[in-house]
Length: 402
Image 1 (cartoon, rainbow, N blue to C red):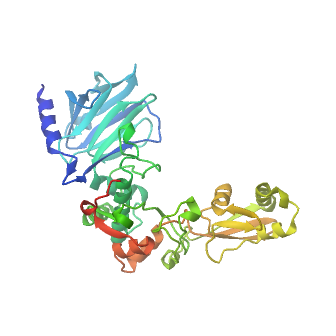
Image 2 (cartoon, helix red, strand yellow):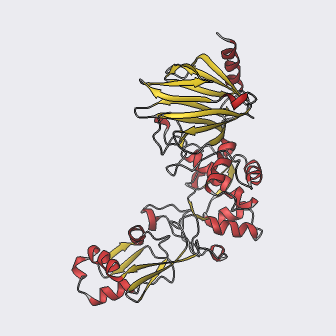
């Protein structure tokens, strides 16, 4: 066994993924929305070992070492060829393999990755490189704390404050543990896109990176639970427009903690996420509603109802006699920012005047930011948007991963 492999065995034994019953590491497929057959890796900080593995993930040999202090940080090129991944470093081909792990020497090491023609990203932890039928898969095995911070920065950036970032840290962690087995049959826990949570880098680029990491540390292990100590589905959106929606009105299933509430905090802002307008030709607008209810095509009363639709409070559907059209369908048809809108006409145009941004269920990010500014703490903010829930330490949650 070569000397690098001996070191690897030590690293694996010392960097256990489970501590005290809590899931410490998480496996996330990177660039999961893209199909690529090549990539470029380097050590940004610290040392990495490139380890060949068998089909069961057992280490069989050390291929090379990447050291951030070396020239070009030990730049490593890889591409698909004849059903394997070819690796090249310093102009020398190192070999072809089916399953390789880029293993960090310690928790302070970070690596960069460029997949196909996508923008370079930076991550903590290790990286598993393997093949599927069409492309190279890159799977980041990373500490939960680093993953949570990376998701916050990827999804929120520098828009928040400390208390809001605490809220987001708890939501991100709650979602991750709620969905920990979502892609387990594929060899990882989550993807880095909207099928899971956006995770385009470690927390590094935002001017608020330090605040984000502080928020993650100060809420370590905290998750949201509802009835029977079950972890909830912590959904959120950009701006409720002043009133949230209950889950049943958007997705046709009911959760007691996802109810419609008046949300004045989301209205304390002046931006396109609060108030917006869109104009559509009258003919285009009416044709959609006539298609939905053909028998009312020549009905003047139906036409008037369509062109003067109003919401004093949020509704789930447009209703006329026996016709019921979910507002989420209308939103999708006309690419509206939310379902919270009123309709009027002007110069043969339908003017759709709306409030809010997103599906409207659960936590409003703008509302949570404004609550943080007003002195509410993360627990108060979470309990405002999610009814009948508790924020607990995941180690005290017997049903945490179910």
